[in-house]
Length: 414
Image (cartoon, rainbow, N blue to C red; front, side, top):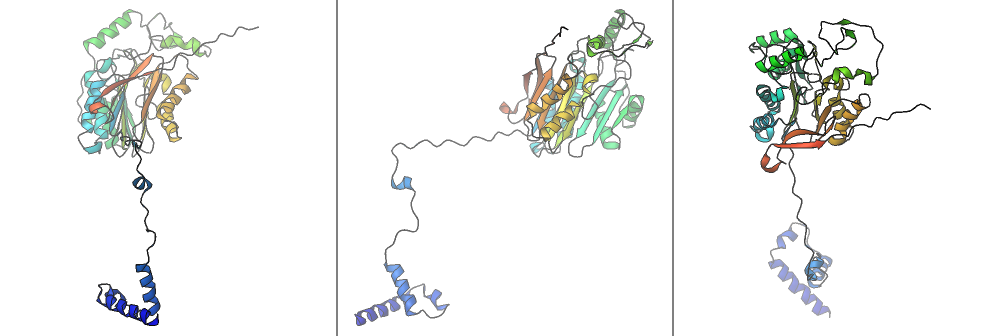
């Protein structure tokens, strides 16, 4: 047995010397007998495989279950969204946004050019020149642009004799350290920036004003004055009166605020990196008292944008809505984790708590492109969206059902 073992070891050493693996051994100390025997045992002894084949390969199933295909990822950005059925404005903004891949560096251009398109088209006679004449028959304009990355705002209010309101607001944003310019001073600034002065009155807006004065200036926005504003035109003077409840305050809003006489385009654009801009433009409330400014150019009221969260725009009865900053409320609600749908409703219900008869809507969009709208005082509210999630990247009109009218309960005293 000793001779047999020694012979085996001698044969193995000759084989190992001739093998390619010898170089690895010569780099270290000479192999001992224990090392050689151990190696011989590892190479000659059969053992279980170190890797186990999947059970499915060893025992194939006759009818395997189908593997579900992965869900396609729906791209939501870039996107443009705006209030009301102002489709041409949205389509134009969408075209501007797509000039660069993913809309990068185009969000400001998109919202400004989109709102400017509405101004030129005189959308519903509530945006741009030739609509909503004030008590003196003049049309004035309000507009705003907000940058969600820097939180900078440019706005104009009561702008006279300048048609390009939203572009003037952009100039305030880009060429001043101010937030808002108003009235004749805003018009002078616009002239300095190269915008020309021209009348905003049209034959249609003049006819609206003439008919209103012929009907004793009804409706209007006056209260507690003499003569009685419900039956006569001014000039008016103050008349002392006790504070009234909201039900007794209806006279100034009985003109039925709606898209045909009191409206705004509010627009939001977001690129693929969640850079956001928001803009607004309006000619305000019809027959307003000269000098009146609504919610549209007020940051947090007409619009608000923050790259960290998202953006919101509002439309409706600006005199009431601006008291609650519904766009800011919606953005802050999303910051706290609420969905866009719940966030939009926060702004509406906050107003509804105090004013039971108002008309308004809020659109909220988070930074990822998820969006929703809430409204009150209408049966439904239309808005327009363009994004990759829409069929063929087309601009699409959508509608949302509004919060139903609140029940008025009459309490009979015992």
